[in-house]
Length: 184
Image (cartoon, rainbow, N blue to C red):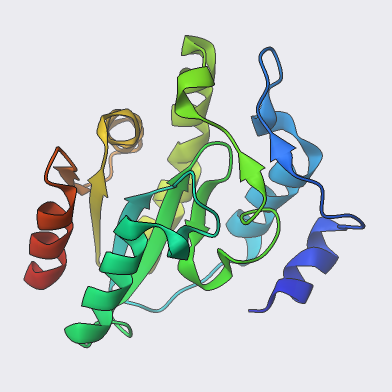
């Protein structure tokens, strides 16, 4: 998949940053809603394992230390054809590694600290269907997530009846990511 295919579906004319502000629900932003639709209707992967990582304040995610480490270890252990990496994101839900450099994933800002309790519930509820979808695409789903994303994914997977092997990122995130990827 390339960015232009996505842009055509999203009907993107301008690449304007999508930014969270108080009292604005980005889950209902038109481009975000079209992305959710695209993911559910067209996204596919034939990789055996889904690896859930958190979104990052650095965009694209591949520039963040956690994602650079995960991608490097995936190459080192020759797992690029086995592991499908998804970033768990508010408001994008799940973002596949292959398109993380495309708009809108490279141009949004939604600090979790700005999420209301209602938005956390909305995030969890909206995440159920994408998690169900990837549970049918992959044999196993593994997540290494900070507390915020961990709790949302855990609740969504329980409601969906999906088994996800979740690992809290904790203070030793590099060690946790390394150990999890090495074990795959």
